[in-house]
Length: 114
Length: 113
Image: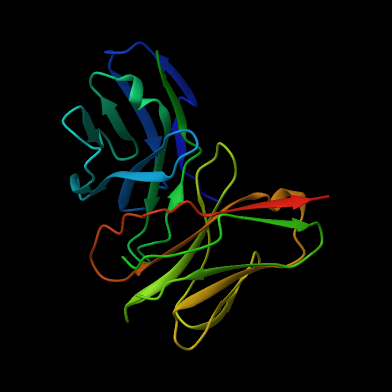
C-alpha cells in the first residue's frame, strides 16, 4: 500500500536556526498538507498546498514558515528561525482529488528546539 | 465545520465491542462524518467515513441515525493494539476545496488485558 514518508524522523536544532522538514506524498495525490501536534495537545492544521501554491493557511503559519514542492515528489516545510514553541511533531498529509477528508498522514518528524 | 462532542476517554477489556459516540447537532446537509485513529507518536489514520445509515469496512462500523445529529463508531472485539485516540470530524467532502482537517481532543480508548 502506498504511504507518505517523512524525513528526518527526529530533528534537534538550536533556537534561531533554520530547519527543513521533508515529505514524499503518495505519488498520484494532488493536495498536500502540513499539520503539527505539540506534545499532549491537538493536531493543528498549518497549511494546504495545491497546484503549486498555498490554498489555505492557519494563523500558526506565519512568515517564519514556508512550503515548497521543489520537484514532482518532495514537499517541504521550512521554518526560517525556530523558536522554542516550535517544538512539536510535524505531520505531512496528502490526498487525491476525490474525498476531501480522507487524508493519508506520514509518520511525522519530531522537532526539538533547544 | 460542525462542532463535535465525544467522550474524553473510554476503557474496554480485550475482546469486547467498543462503541464511541460523537454528537454533532449542527451538522449541515452536505457534511459527512469521518473518523480517524491516532496511535502514540504516529500520524492520524483514516478509519471510516459515512453520510447516513450504516457503513462497514474491515476495521470498523459507523452507525448514523436518520437525524444525523450523532454517530457511533463501533470497533468489534478490540485488542490491545486498538489502544489509541479516536477522532470524529464532520464536514463536507466533495467539490473544490482545501478540506483541512480540524481535530478535537478525541476519545482516548484504553484496552485492558
